[in-house]
Length: 413
Image (cartoon, rainbow, N blue to C red; front, side, top):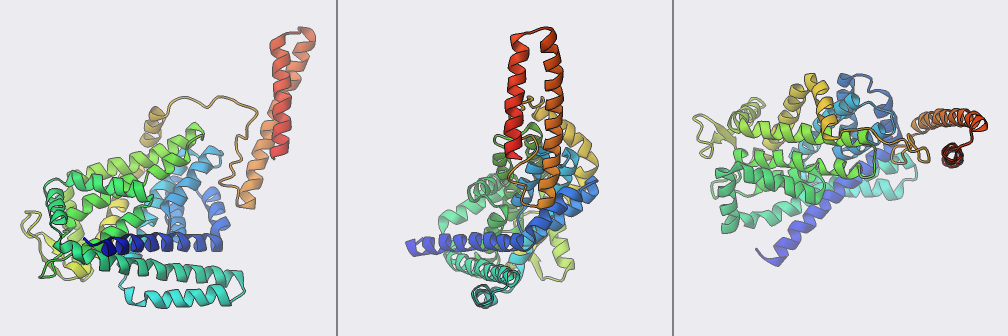
């Protein structure tokens, strides 16, 4: 592969990730505070939490952003662990929207979106219109990146090393799972990794137009991406509470166990995806890779849609499986992350600067901190009476420590 091809490939990937990031940023500017409020206030039951997680992630176009917010809410006491697990399940469903955007055949209009978005961003003064312009501009840049990657990937069809890798994935699907997981951990975005997979699957073809990557080979990579994306939530819990770490652990368990389960039923799942694609009206050709009589695989033009269907079916079915077992998930993550957080007064227990962007949430967190200050003050009063009756160094130290904690909390609030 030539240097120019490699540069085009990585440049296209950079544009694709930049477009996704800018589109999510524009959407969050448009409705970011509202989304935080909705997440914190409207997740009373696990089912409602799943619905809210799905809708919020579809809007902000990032399951990682939703999961990081959830981790912060759990750490701040705004959300229970079962509610958080529900939102995480919904976020996994909502993130499939990006795969459907990539599957849309609007590549030829990419530069039009860029031009229209640019005009809205730089020639219109109203902030709301400018934010919408940012979304449109980023949407176009996303497809410009896809087109660049598509052009760079065509020579891969002639690469012997690439063909050998595909043969290994065909014979050993676990290798595809590892490739997907590692790639997603590196780029820190399952949507980006799956977008690359969609582009590669729809571009690398043989002379007859049949994809070099069959759906049977693509699905393990997709499942690996769902495992790799959990690293973002884990990193967000560094220095966090035990409950926030449990929420991140729930995300990892949900995605990892689900992916491993689907690896065991890879052939039937591939068949189900192909039948689903067939129902929605796409042309299919016989697949010689799976060894299953009558199994079909999409032609190259339909591989993007087939991967989007796979991604959606996996997350929906995985959620249906785990939904009645949320209670078991809670017990499991408490075993993974045991114990209780130590009581440290000189520290904010509820206010988390990652989640106080919404005034309504900030006020609620401040009220919780004030109630905590009241408890500390009451304990100081009890200790003071005890100190008068029986002076000990331990009581005196605790009183002064609590006084410093109250001063600190007052200043922070």
